[in-house]
Length: 196
Image (cartoon, rainbow, N blue to C red; front, side, top):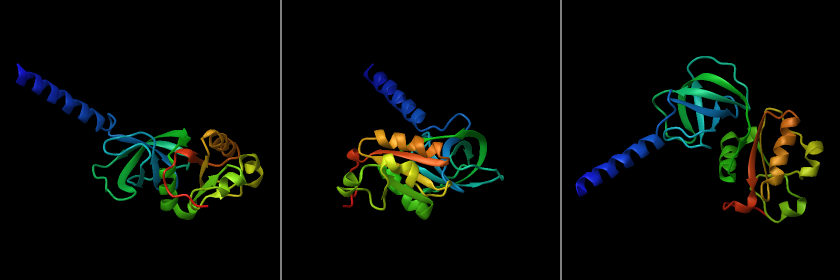
């Protein structure tokens, strides 16, 4: 009887693990298009986690719009590099989308996209001067609408102290026509490098 329980528990554990690691029923992923081929995963799938970056080479031509989320059928092989690399086919345009990300992911996106991404600290100048993320520019929330001077296709990542102002900033930028705006939340929970 003791062995039967061990077998049942082991079977249950294996079932839970396989469910946690499975892709969607049709083997697809969902991702927010950041630029030409870089997607931010908006849903975990298989060994890929929500918030991971993946570069997808399309097997069939598709007219893609930065800032839209897409359902994508990826090939069997995903190269484990940074970011991940795969071939895929667009199954569906899910429309314009917003995403909330961690500041660790924000740094990774800026590192990957370089000049195609900007990190914007929407706190006051005094808060910014007390410590900010490396490479971030400071445009206080109350000045954002008048001072933002970025290309509409550029990936903008906003953050503040706790996440309230970054949420407002995300909406302001979306209303101004910026296509890819990511909410990095608050720096108060960030454990990475800070500049003064």
